[in-house]
Image 1 (cartoon, helix red, strand yellow):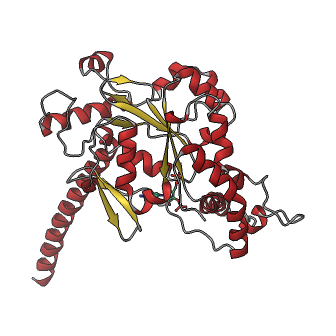
Image 2 (cartoon, helix red, strand yellow):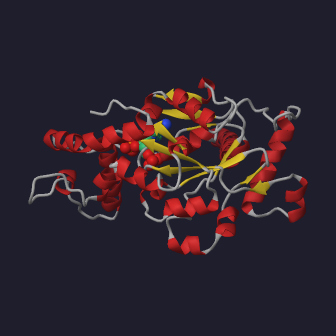
Image 3 (tube, rainbow, N blue to C red):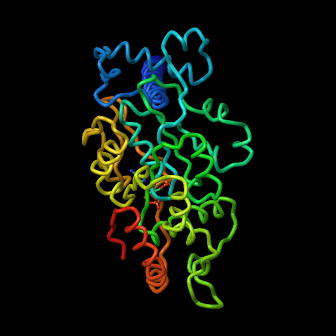
Length: 345
Ligand code: A3P
């Protein structure tokens, strides 16, 4: 009798467990699919092409589903034509700076209903092999979008690569260029931390930051060290200015994007001539992550991957002071050229 009751109980538990797991799997799949569909995901869920009537939520979800199919390459040419979807060359590019907050900026701009991001870094202009594939190859790497939307891509290596300004100029001389910067010493340490993590993952040892940033022979800042060179923003910007006027650049404060993202994003909306659509609703502070995360709508929100917001190793204060002193004159020049002043030490 007791055995029979136990068997019945086990059976009930099994059914309940299966139901719970099934529901969980459904939810995971649903949130996952929303993640992939987010480029069309509007802030208020109802933003349609300007001057057009609001698209009902159900229809929009249907369209998002289609966009996903298009991305996977499952759509026929007829379907693409029917829904008026296009792959457009970017109207704006986040050209750098590496570790400045380029991913956060791209993802946050993607909250805007008129912006569609290229998810991957495309490295078209900095990679000779990719560049040789031609502009059509580049365009085909862009996500599907509606004609009224603009496409944005980010490849931070563009900022420091010699050939890139001329190549971008040849594609579109009036393109808008976004540069996100952080206090140069912090950025250099962040850059080092990323490389260090890569070495550790491969069980390799690596030098301490101090050893790389300071030349042991002269005890001066080692300008051959890439993480240092990348932080001399003005040197790189000057190369770009041979091709583009300063009005075509917008400088984003990467330190402020961490602590107070909305005003920075509003400045970008203005620079891109977009109507202000990103609001505080779209950004919420996640205390566990210690960063702002993104809210697309009531169902879907996300934080950046764990590789964004790493803990930096402790660096000798005398090295930090030396680096800050080194960057100081370059920073002054950068403020002067860009017309944007930062409180960098
Ligand atoms: P750290 O890892 O040094 O903290 P990039 O995307 O260009 O590689 O920049 C990475 C940096 O973006 C991170 O550097 C992090 O500080 C910054 N960042 C800005 N906003 C963020 C956000 N909302 N979530 C996570 N990281 C963010």
